[in-house]
Image 1 (cartoon, one colour):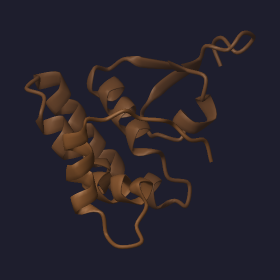
Image 2: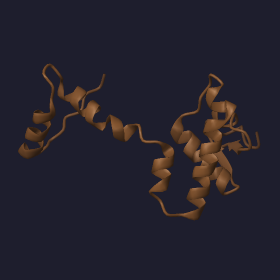
Image 3: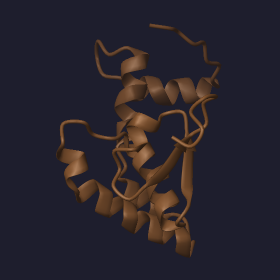
Length: 120
């Protein structure tokens, strides 16, 4: 696993140290306290943006997540579902390197941008 070095203020260090459980590493602490942020529902994220097209995209996302796609044993990453929802809501075509992945999403028009794949 790669490691990063962070510089934080003494005040921030003390705040984190006070939250740390016995035997817990700082890495485990940061993962624990940020878990709720990483697990936010896409609909909560979409609700933060006051845009009609984005709201429509959120509905598309909700529909996609409720289809057989999410229960097919080959789920699509939530952020990719968000991308697909935005593309569907705007009736656009997605140009992607990951054509095999996105082509599983019903109704999504997509093409590859890789050389030699144009028009696939």
